[in-house]
Image 1 (cartoon, rainbow, N blue to C red):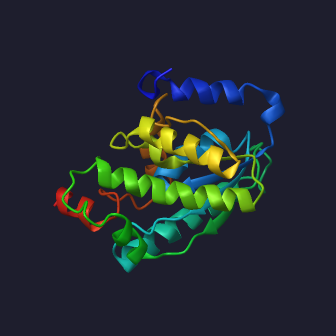
Image 2 (tube, rainbow, N blue to C red):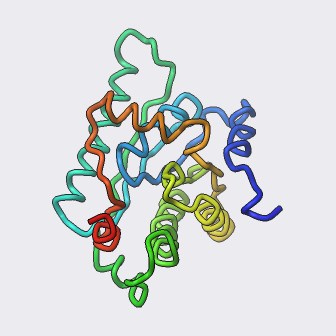
Length: 214
C-alpha cells in the first residue's frame, strides 16, 4: 500500500487495541510542549513514555530555551496529576533533552535555504530529528519510537512516517505510526495549550519558517 493511501491513525489504534503492547516503552521525539500535549494525553495511559526534546532547527537561543522549559513544565504538570487523588491511571513521563547544535541544522540544509516551507528542507529536518531519536531509542532499548510532528496540519505526515519506518529498519527499533492531527488531535492540542497556559509559537523554529511567517 502506498504511503499516501495509508491511514496512520487507524494503524496506531490497532496497535493500541493490542493489550500485549500496554506498558511498553515509547521514545517520543517532541518538537514543543503544545504539540506534545495531546500526544501525551492520548498515549500516557498505554505506554511508558520518554520524551526526547531534540530540536537543533530552532535558530535563536532564547526561543529554544523557552520552548524547552515549557516542555518540561508540561510534563511536570502531567506527572503531578498522578500523585494526587489517584484519578489518573497513567504512567509517569520521563524527559531527556538532546544536544542543541544549530550548526548541525544549517549544515544539513545547506543549499536548500530557498526551499518553500513544507518541502525538501523540511524533509531533511524531519530526518535529522528522527535519526537522533532512533539512535537514542535503541540506546534506551525502547520498544517503539515516534514523533509529535504529525500533529501539525503543516507537516507532511506521510513523509514523516516514511522516514521513521526506514530508520526503524536501520536501527532495529519499531516505529510507531501516527497522524496525530486526526481525531481532532490538533484541536485538542490547542485546548490543552490554553488549559495549561502554554507558550504557543506561530512558526516551526528555524529562521526560514520565521521569515515566511513574517
